[in-house]
Image 1 (cartoon, rainbow, N blue to C red):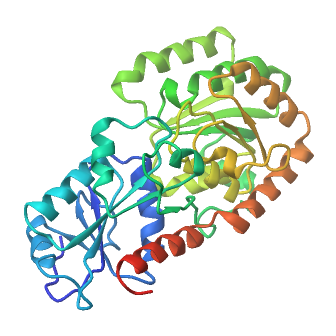
Image 2: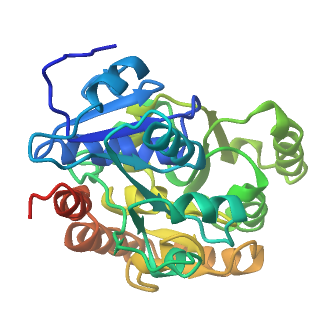
Image 3: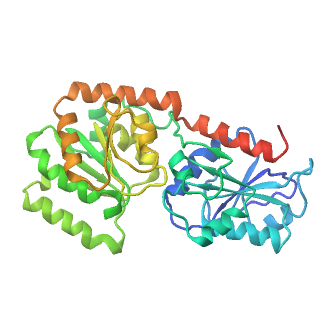
Length: 355
């Protein structure tokens, strides 16, 4: 844990959740890009060796005084517990910080959450839909982005499949923890109904199964076995974060079937990798996907709609591949991490008195 006493960090990123989550993923993607313009540190659980990490005592020492221009340092919260920490630091320890919050949730907030973000000096959100659940007008709507230099199409998909131990066929993937809310039930059910018609395709499920959902996973595997399709599904479980981009490159189609999503990076990561998607009406998926152009949109928890779009897309592999190329173009045009970082930094600079 570093604590350089003479470093004038401008932005503090708290990470108060031990478990790696979608929020952690978004932070790890955007902050290194933001650091090209501004000076960052983190506090709490480790994030990334590129982001200096302070102890809480070190943070209190740092925030005893404002920055040289008189502005308070940004303290960017993305969870309730981080907003709580910001208010304690500011009002109990008199830390010179400017707490802000990014809200991605597309649901009604609890009274406690509303109280917390009402005390923030700025509130950001990732889409108009997420913003509609806020009781105050967001200061900025900034969609997430992905790094197209990390997520990019494969030059030789078949060779990469062999390297990663995947079957030498086309792959339909789903990424995320194995649980009903991620649409795994619709994914397994829909593919059990369609794979027999498409012998060149297999299913790949990438994600951890926590003990709570082991019985759910076993039910899914039993249904696959009942259909005689065990050889058509690969369950990879939890994989190293560094391997995820390679796995996206191996796919011919990715399903993003969450029942509820804050924004959803999986869709962006797949499309940046040159892979079309079937995505549900949640998160930022509708903002990103152009139906019939680079993917398809279906209602949440609708297995029949998933089957319909699967048949449409799998029956024409030339069109499927061209949709993947257009998906890559879509991300490059509108949803890069560089675009997101620049937009967030613009908010920071305004609050820091740099504009």
